[in-house]
Length: 315
Length: 272
Image (cartoon, rainbow over all chains, first blue to last red):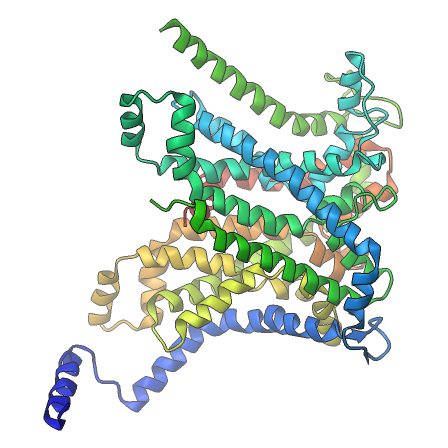
C-alpha cells in the first residue's frame, strides 16, 4: 500500500466527520462527567455492596474467623473440612431433592395452565390474576400458611383426608415428608410465575403454523409436540435457568417451615451457610461454602447455556 | 359439535376448580384469623360461628406490629425511590451515552444478577458492622440501592423510545439531563410502573438480609416479625394467620392496582 493510497483511505474514512460535531478537550471532559453522573448512582452501590463483598468472601474463605477475633490464614483448609464432612454432601443432596421435586411440578403445571388460558376462555384475565396471586406473597407467609394447612393434628388437609378415611402423614414434622411439604408450598407460590412466562411464549407463536399443522391432519397432541413445545423452547429455557438458580438458593421457606428439621432432614445449603455464620461462628467455612454454592450455580447455568443449542429453537 | 362443546365446558370447569384450589389457602388464612381459640386440636369451621377480630387486636397489643408495618413500609418506599433513580440513570447511560468499554461495563452489571446474596452475607455483615450500620435502616437499605434487573428492564424500554425525539431536542439546545428528564422518562412510564411494583415487592417480601442486619425487635420488618410469631404463639394459629393477612393486604392492594404492569414485567423478562 503506497503512501498516497493510505492517505486517501484516511481521508475517505474521515469523510463523514463533519456530521459529528468536533469535540474539543473541554466538551470531551464535560461528556465524561455526564456519563459519570448517570452511571455513578448505580456503580457505587454495586461496587461497594456486591462486587467488593464478592471478592472479600473469597478472602474470608481462606481464613479461620469467628467474626470477632482476628482472622487466621488457613489456606484451603475450610474447603478441605467441608469436603470431608459427610453432612456437606447431605445439604447439597437435600437442595437437589428440592429442585427435582419442585421443577416438574411448576413446569408441567404452569404449561397446562398456560395452554388452557391461551384459548378463548371466558374470564381468563381474572383467572390469570388468581393463579398469579401467590407470586406476590412473601415466602414467609407462604411457609406459615402451608405449615397450618399441612398441620398433622388439626390442619385442613389431614382433616379432609381423615373425612375420606385416609390417615394423613406428619408432613413437616416427619423427616420423610418435610421436604415434600416444602416442595408443595413452593410450587403453589411459583406456579403463576411460570404460567405467565410460558403464556407470553405461547402468544408469540404464529397462529398460521397451527392452521398449517391442522391442514396436514395433525391432532392436538401432535401439534403440542411438533409445533408448540419446539417453539416454546426459549421460554422453557428461561424457566429452567431461573428455577435452577433460585432452587440452589432456596432458604426463606425452609427456614420458616421446618428450620431445616426435623433432625436436619430438610437442611439446605443456604441454611447451613446461615447457621455456620451466625450460630457456630465459622465465618470462614461459611464463606467457603457460599463460594462452593456459587461455583455449582455458575457451572449448572453454563452447562445449560452450552446445551441450549441442541434443543432451544429461536425460530 | 357436541363433543367439542363438552370439551370446552370441561376446560372451563377444570380451570375454575384449579383457581379455587389456588385461592383456598388465602381463604383458609382469613377464616382461621377470625376464628379465635384455634389451638392444638381444633380445626376451624369453614363458616365460623362466632367470627371475631380478637386475634388482630391481640397481635397489635402484644407485639409491636404497628411499628413493624411502618418499618416495612418505610424501607419498601425508600428502596423503590432509590432504585427508580439508580436504574433509570444507568439505563439512560447504557442506551444513549456511548463510551469506550460500555459493553463490558454492562456485562458486569448483568453478572451481578447471578451472584447469590448468600455469597455476600458474611462480608456484607462485616462491612456494615465496620461502618457502624448494623441495626440501622440505612444498613438494611444500602445493598438494595442498585438493581441489575431494574437497569435491564429500563434499558429495554429506553431503547424503544425513538431517537428522533432526542435529536429534535438536541437541536433545540437540550443537554442530556433535559432529554432524560423531559423526553425519556415520560416515555417509559409503563416500565417505571413495572419497576416500582417489583422494587416494592422485593423489599416488602425480603427476608435474609433484614434478618441479618436488623437484630433489634423495634427495627424488625414484617417477614421477620412473622417468622418470630411462630416462636411465641406456636399453636395459636388464629394470631399467626392474622399476622399473615396483615402482611398480605398491602401487597395485594398494590397488585390489584398494578396487575397489568406486574404481569407485563414478568412476561417481558421471559421473552428475551
